[in-house]
Image 1: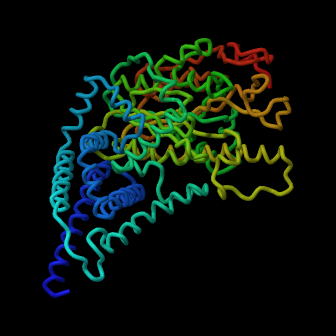
Image 2 (image 1 turned 90 degrees about the vertical axis):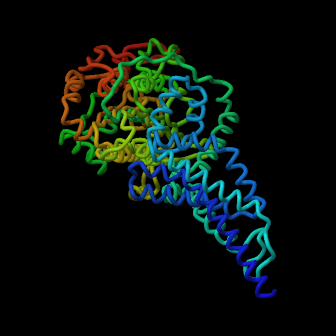
Image 3 (image 1 turned 180 degrees about the horizontal axis):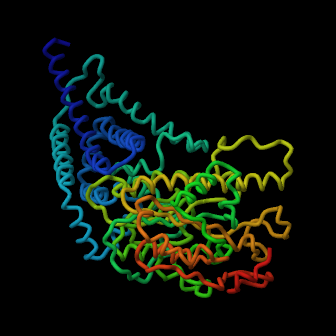
Length: 554
């Protein structure tokens, strides 16, 4: 090849690589909006790495494929603009349920959201930069390529692009492999990191939409519920309802402080005035599919049938002006409700996912209230649904978190040890959630209760697990607690709300719901506990009905 031809070829190569660089930059620009929210440094780096990989891959493909990706980016520009607006409001990209909520929003909600978004100048800058870079790369890719250049390969797929592609795919491949081999506690990326880029959100929406169709939820449930009315709340507050699974009464409580460091940390926190252990709680029922809808709607067990249409407490917060999120490590079919701002759930294709995986998701949603100052500091509320201590108990906590099990344990002893460890891990997750509350610059709190309790071999009552031949005192009652930060402790609301609760011998899930609402400001305190809590239970194995919790036997 002559020198002039070589120089011309290298110029074409440089132009080609510049176009690829512009395309990667155009895809990465929307992610910059995520970092306008106050995120933890480690979290920011992981999101930045994921988004960088997602942006580099399309820009490193063979030329024809890359041009197709450029065209698709133009076609999906309206969706990308919606994604960018969603991030300005929520700090993270949307998933399937959020897309459904956007499509079902009324005109008033759309204008309200648009008004909140358009006042953010950073959005206009990001949109302008994204479109400008996309226009530049489009102009470059329309030019015809040149001749092959020794050491570089052809313009169809330059050798440099191949290396960059492999480098971008490597972290994603390693992270996926760790998840496939159930090593998800070795984190490269967390499940929420993919929502830091439009491509990640589109992939998640496609995956979750596919799961909805496969599992029949898209066709079998409309998700429509009657609207919830509430007084408007203007002052920012972070309101959380954390729902555990199969936690016995006292299972996470002051009598378990010698079991491990995390229950002890909770007790120390409460002794310092940043929370309280609540009395033994009568569950709405001893089965998740019954107790969780009752808990979330605040209805008594006698009105179980109404939970299919009644709005949840989170819907009441939404109508009071809160930004709302549904974060679950459980099956989504337990309770479905549309219209919230943000949804995250464990993919159905992932068999096991420990509850701590939800903490960075929660932190991202709460980010506007964790910053010293910033836009969109409206009140925020979330339901966080844990997998908790659901059997198999040994699957509920990370391997290596506790010492090796003694070899001489019998089966019953091993079951009880693993159950205790699952509860202690649940206490660890609560400590992590408390750390999020402490990072909040505004009043923040979390109410915790579990859906029901559990029967263990040591009870010797003829019943194991829950939903057995009869409802027992062990699976019909559970633990509850409240945590708050210093900003909330400085006010009088916690003391006022709990004044009549803390001395009660027994409270109900309804009482817990009213505590959640009163601490959020949509109801007045103090909460007066039900003196005769009821439960949807089977006392004699002849069917479920509403009975007094005091009728339950061990």
